Length: 193
Image (cartoon, rainbow, N blue to C red; front, side):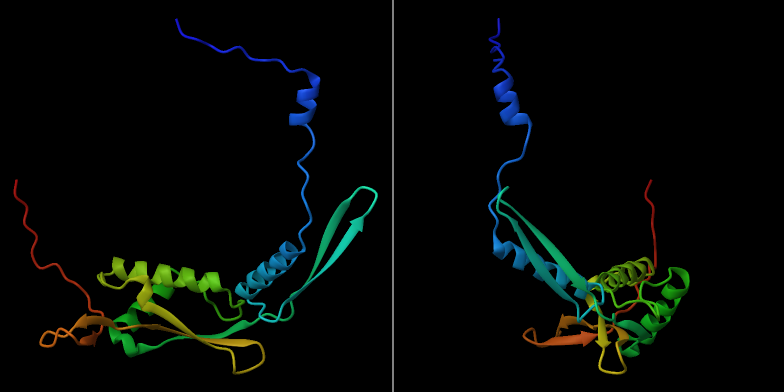
């Protein structure tokens, strides 16, 4: 036989203590500052580079509670004015980027806000599209963006470019050589049954 412990019924006091209410929390003003910084970081990633967050802390002495109100001033967002592809990575990748934008669409479109997550998605989607189209060595880390916000008023000009692949020099192992990303072709396929 197995031993099964009995469940203890501790009564209504235990139920009241464990099932209802919430644990007391001590107010920490440093967490308010941390929350403000996190909100500003989020707003910058959403294209609001001059956003500001202010807080107001209310104390209720009788109930010993505090409340925090945050006021967010987003300001004017940066909008995408132009998007172009730098062809220094090779003419093949330039044509492939044109094909990608026609077939798959793009996350960075003229008139949209400059959102950091859209640039990351564009990098991931384009590198996957390249690998699906015989550019197997092109990882997402090779796709980069140059964003110029100095021209115009709250305008972003984006240049999409691919870094060249680095390999060690065949004659000098200490040196590296930069080469363009090429396509890979399958010459022969043999099946042994």
